[in-house]
Length: 115
Image 1: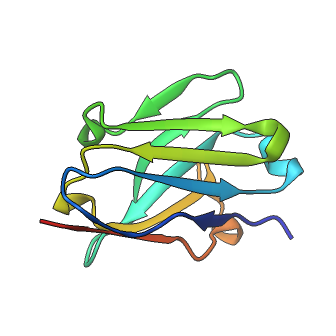
Image 2: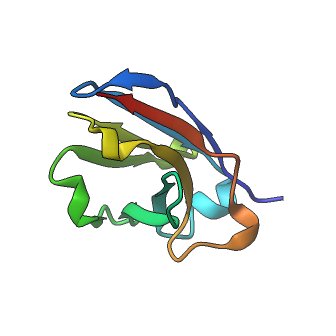
């Protein structure tokens, strides 16, 4: 069954950096636009960034140049490099297609930023 597995979540101090990884299936990585999403406490899930096979990238406005999305199709892995983290970035981070597919959601990676 196609699904994503996220890793790399941690507790970090404000201003710190973290890199999240996401492993998926060959079927997903060779076909679709991939994306990182996040869901903060009491908030709806929101798009963070997406990346196409062509390399086209789009970021949410709140990223403000702090995050970098990348993908390694040979390893079926996607990354999210996060710098200058803020308390507002505290959330569970998920990866999926863009647009998302319900059955592809994994457990997510918890990122907690302390101020």
